[in-house]
Length: 368
Image 1 (cartoon, rainbow, N blue to C red):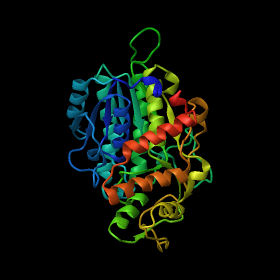
Image 2: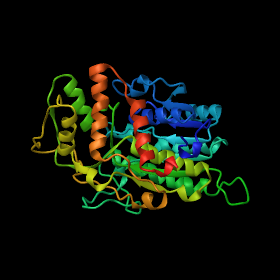
Image 3: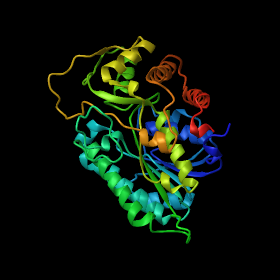
């Protein structure tokens, strides 16, 4: 089966944030695609348990801070990748209120460090920078944000990710588009920015996220108090945006300059539901889940009530589409946690294979 035109087979791929939730799933997929991988993440355990450590992978594993420029540059120059996926970040809204300086350092200066290091590593041809749906200045609109809408951010996390996009756009315009390898107009480095919706899936144990909170409490026989049951979010399985990142990477490696811009990747309209509705769907697939949907009297910290993405640009120009509807997404997510807690199983690769088969059946562009 040829996926992404077999472009990752034997390809040197540098992955920042490979021990995080999204990064660990991308690590599993890249290895299945035959890529030669170097992962770069912070020292120490980043989630409990660490999903990446549950996978049987054979990669170069560098533990370092994205803010440590010399270590990052040295790792890139030693490995000499052709493509870089940048997922390293401080990804939590609530933690960003507690640690705003660390959040801005990781998300803004970390991105600047990574892009400057790519400039200084002459093997790099393509970079995919991963941000978030929260980069938009949220106006509580009842429709999805488009790539041309204004960037902003109320909380330190959202603001830092919006800033990181300004950094990325600056590097593209100031350096990547002007530093060329030949007279044919080709940039030496092509870079794309990917904004994804609210991602769920097995292996996430981060604090203050709905799915990790309810499954962690369920495993301990506790009831979860859901702080914003009426907040609406665009829910998608972690494999949906990862397929998009890999599709972008394929296009960039093929020299397709039209891929080198910002893209939204979110679910279909039926998967844009409230936090409470998501919790109830999850409970259908694991009746051990218990939660309280009582809305708190007041919120100490600001959070967005309604958030959705307009992904028509990616559908029209990339041919991308989501594969799993919300029912499938919650079913596979709960199956992963049930397998882990009840049978000590790690279903990552099995679910990845199922997702790929479903994508083949639906004739996803990256399976052709």
